[in-house]
Image (cartoon, rainbow, N blue to C red; front, top):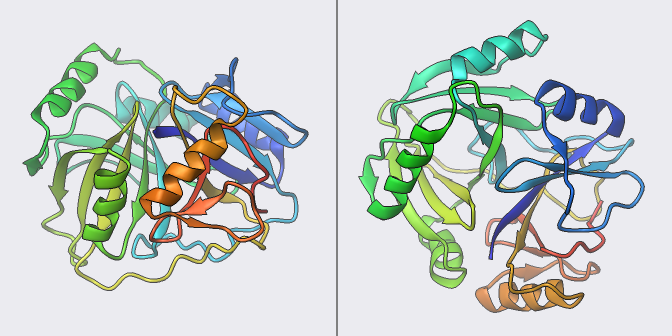
Length: 285
């Protein structure tokens, strides 16, 4: 039951499609993991999809760029070469909030916002972890990086979330949902005490941020129109019927996810991250 898609809210769907298709080169999803009603577009990002949802009256609804805030922090894409790809984006008018720069873990990264403020990352190569928990998964990452063409464009890699309690998050994602811990990266110069824990979530990765500094609450509520980072879609190939979402929702509830009152098959993780099963259901605005 891995990450199937990330959902992003946008004020103007046409403008966001110009950005994600025209700027980043993503293609329309040929077999999206849910229906496409008016105001929704699915994009193929390789290992997972992007779901764009139009919310003309939406805003960031309290989301803050500070990673100490719990909830979804960014969506990351692998590219062949970050400095080269970042230069292409800069030439097209993209302004970076961080980088490009080489960081702990021996990779290049860069961060930039989409038209509605969703935080996006590009990263190249394979991480050198401070501690490796699953050598076979780390080896798979190195092999994939070696095969990636230097001029490769964005391919979905991960969703990052900040949590208040690592043990509680691992109990949910690793012990109950079965995501395997690949490794941990310690950021020795970060005064907030940042550690990043990488879990294999199907074909994608879930990054869990923890800090020694206090974290702040997740501002998500179900009754606020929201643009930017909204939802992590979870699914499993075994569920291919109209009842698939409900079956996955039952599994999530059994794992400890909290149902969202008034919304069928929508749940939150222990830190308030909205989770949506594979088959689409009405998503809280």
